[in-house]
Image 1 (cartoon, rainbow, N blue to C red):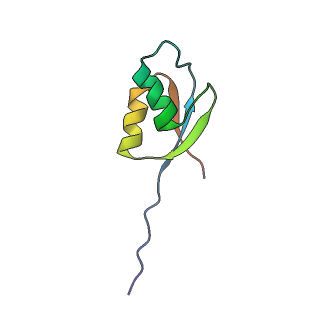
Image 2: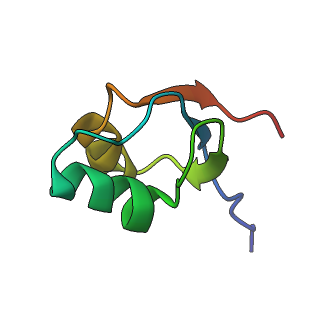
Length: 70
């Protein structure tokens, strides 16, 4: 019996580079609740899924995305 290797999980580092002031409430909610960002310069590492990519697309003008180094 062979063991299967798990596929490497891709991760993204998402950094907030602009203020959320002046944006719609739903954009602020995606930043705060969905991505976990709260202030300029804060960053999180999340798994690259379609769900995460959708949240990034909503607030692409506020965040910077880069692959996470492990």
